[in-house]
Length: 155
Ligand SMILES: [Zn+2]
Image (cartoon, rainbow, N blue to C red):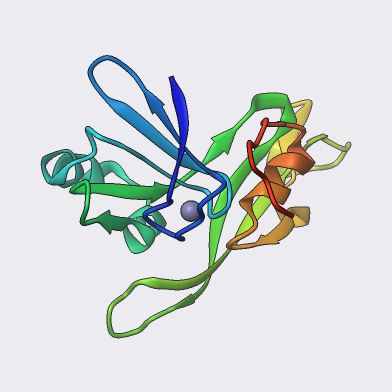
């Protein structure tokens, strides 16, 4: 079962969904691009954070109501490309990411003479990735072609 909840990260009332399973629930906010799960507790995080990209640890957010961590999404859709967060400013004292953008990189054919991608026919076009505001994850996934029926969406 799926229902709309208030996002613990950005506070959105309309774009955050809880997918309720028998044993756990998962959360996904299409406004800020953060996700969580009722299993992402302190114990989970202390293990998982060791293998996480630095940026994930700099951006993760603690949900004090549910006692779980929220992490920025990384969406890898193969041929459709990839959406990932890119930090724009980091607080020097706390080491936390204060501003970020969502970057959407498409998959492009490898051109002749591209030595870095030699041996491949396609690559992720990171240099020409499109940027979207940190609170506009929705535009990035719309551009990617993933549509979601957002109940009560107010543009
Ligand atoms: Zn949110």
